[in-house]
Every structure is written in C-alpha cells, then in structure tokens.
Amino acid sequence: MIPTTKDDTTFDNNNKEMPFTSDQIFDAIRNAQGDTPFHLYNGDMIAENARHMIKSFRNHFTHYTNYFAVKATPNPHLLDLLKQQGMGVDCSSFAELILSQKVGFKGDEIMFTSNNTPDKEYQLAYELGAVINLDDITQIDAMKQALGGEKMPRMVSLRYNPGPLKQGNAIIGEPQEAKFGLTAAQLPEAYAKLKALGVDRFGLHCMVASNELQLDYFEETAKLLFNTVAELSRSPMSLTFEMINLGGGIGIPYRPGQKPVDFVQLAQRIANQYNNIILPLLSDQQQYVNANIKEIKIVTECGRVVTGPYGCLITKAIHHKSTYKQYVGVDACMVNLMRPGMYGAYHHITVLKQNNQNNQNNQNNQNNNNLYDIVGSLCENNDKFAVNRSLPNIEKGDILVIHDSGAHGHSMGFNYNGKTRSAEYLFTTTNNNNNETKTFTCIRRGETLDDLFTTLDFSKWDNKDL
Ligand SMILES: *Cc1c(COP(=O)(O)O)cnc(C)c1O
Image (tube, rainbow, N blue to C red):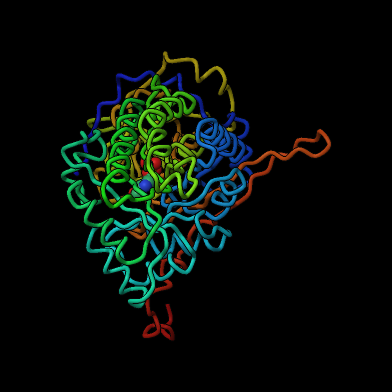
C-alpha cells in the first residue's frame, strides 16, 4: 500500500475527548520520571467497554464471547484484564499462543486463526485445546500431518472468504484479493473431508472488514454466514455447527465527529438475522434436535474496538523547524505508532502546554492555531504523525497526546534506525472502603540499547579499548 499524505485541515481539532484528564497525563509523566514517549492505557475504561460489549451480545446469545485479537495489544496485563471481564483470545502465531497460555487461557477460551501455518503452531494450538480455524482446504492434511497423522481435534472451524459475494471495505480491500480463507465452492468439500477424518463439531468463520463503522456491513456478513450454515446443515452431510465466528474489524472513531459502533444495536441486528435464519434450523434439522443444541454459539474476534480508544501515545515536542512548511519534531516516531506513516491513517492529537499551565483554556482557543506536520526522527519522509494539521501553537517541551493508540499501536513497533520501542503503562482505579486509589503500572518497560544489541556478537571487539 502506498502511504498517502492526507490533508488534515478539514477537521476540527478541539472536539475529541482524551481517555484521560490533562492532570492524569501529567501524573503519568511524573510517574514515568519524565521518560517520554510511552503508551498509556486506561484500564478502567477498557474493562467497562469490554463488559458492555459482552453484555450487549449476551442479551441475545447466552454463550457469546469476544475472542480478543492478541495482535492488537499483546500485553499479558491487558489480556488478564480482558479475561477477568469474560473475553477469550484470538491467536495467530506461536508467540500469541504462549502469551495466552501464560495468562491462563485454555481450551475453547482460545481461538487459533492463522494462515500459512507452521507445523509447530498446530501442535501447540492442539495441546492447548484451542478451537482451530483452518485457512485453506490444504490445511486439513497439513494439520493432520503436523499432529502426527493419527489425531484430529474433535472440533474444527473453517475460514470462509466469500469473494465476489461480499463487497470489501475500504481498509481491508476486496475479498477476492485477500489471501485468506476458502471459497464458497471449497467449503462443502472441506467439511466432508473433515467429517471423514472423524471431526464431528464444526465452526464457520469470516473476517472481511477492518476498521468498519457501518452496522449494515456487519449485519450483512452475519446474514451471509447464517445462510451458509443453514445450507450446509440442510445438505446431505447434515453438518452440526456449534460456533459461528463473525470475525473482528469493528472500527473506532479515529476522527472527530465519527460515531462509535453501538453494541446494543449491532447485537440486535445480528440477533434478528439469527432468529430468521438459524432458529428454524435448530428445530427442523434432526442433527440439532438429537444433540439437543438450542443455540449456536455466536462469537466475535475484535481487537481494535476493545482497547483502541483507551490508549494514547504520550510524546514531547523537542524541535521546531520552519522551511517550506512548519514542522514539530517529537520524541516519538513511527516505530512507536506506524499507522499514520503506513496507512496515512488519522490519529487525533491534543496539545498540552508544558507544566499543565492553562490547558483548560488553551484547548478551547483555536485563534492561535498553526498548520503543522508532526514528525519523528526516522530517515523516512513518511515518519509523520500528522500532515498539515491545524493545532494550537506548540513550543519545545509541550506534550502531544496522540489518541487511539490502544490497538495496533505499540504492537506494530519495529527497530529501524536502531530506534527502541517505548514503555507501556496501565492506569487503574481501585476502591478500598470508599478510598479511591489511582495507579500507573509499568506493564512493559522501554527497550534499552542492550535489548537492541542482544542478538549481535561483539566478542571480536570486547577487549579493545573504546
Ligand atoms: C487482525 C484480526 C482481527 C482483529 O481485527 P480488529 O480490526 O482489531 O478487530 C481478528 N481476526 C483476525 C483473523 C485478524 O487477522
């Protein structure tokens, strides 16, 4: 994808709330001994949002859960927090499985949705009892062989790519162009093959959207999946489905003025489709009646909408440069948050005057705004957090809060130019006898030069004087 440089001037910069007060941000900076940049997550808000999401869906689907996509924010402390609210995990790599195992997820609390999968990942997923979601018809034999040729999991899910039957969304592109999933034509053959190998519990999965805010889009996907399940259940194979995974991809309002997805409405819309298409199946198909299956488990595997809005990247302005444009250099760069540089994605920025002076007044005063490019220090011209952004006057030492870094933020980090990845902090409130304690916990320290150099062999130069 070619990075685009978006003109950001059309957006009103003063009407998007931070997940923290400015006082809390300065407390967090003091707590970090001034060592910016870092990502800061609001654990209270993440927990509340997770509970609300689960409750909205469980009103219709008793067994609903969201498998949190670990790649969004792979930190054990956040996974643990989500586990406490009743979420599972969606893993797609060896490391993500290990991380989930360490936090205590097991069995069907883990969904393993991988592609181009190495043998050892199937072995680990099987050992953990994860629900394995295969990406291709060839992966049936590949998994069987990886597991030694004798064993198969009792339950297997398949990832469906509807191709031309479903329009792609702007971010993820057209399904036909996606490397993921099986075609509609391959599904019956793949399920028949699994059945012949002794699998008797089935799942169907589809993920065709990313950062999508339209309810219609998800309702349509649900309808498509429910119809596919109905067709396969009524086919002569009489397949029994136990789980339908609607995937992730629920978007968040990155831009001011965008509306978040309403979970209550979304769940209601999906339930309407379920009641029309799935409910009749459960009473008229013998395999469901015999197995006494009253509900097919409906699940999602969202990452972004769970943590995204409740994290931000805290960075400090360190330089000002005026050439053909006005630049503000900050101490964070693209290795801390690559979405703007990689996708041309918009991340809102709130400027806080240093020492927290007049921040209340300043945020409402648009009169002394400037057009800035906010840049990092990589030798890459797309290392920009914002292009032509109208922001209040920024001086050296001011704090820039880059919003919505709570998912696909720190986790996409890298080490180009020898840059080290930052720390992550979790803000939580605990209530003891009406005594509120607010804590900032370091849940990942920043990388050091030793971390960066640990894979290099310097022994040849060890005894030389520097
Ligand atoms: C990335 C991914 C997700 C999570 O996507 P979000 O946009 O964070 O909700 C879920 N499922 C699969 C298979 C993915 O690759």
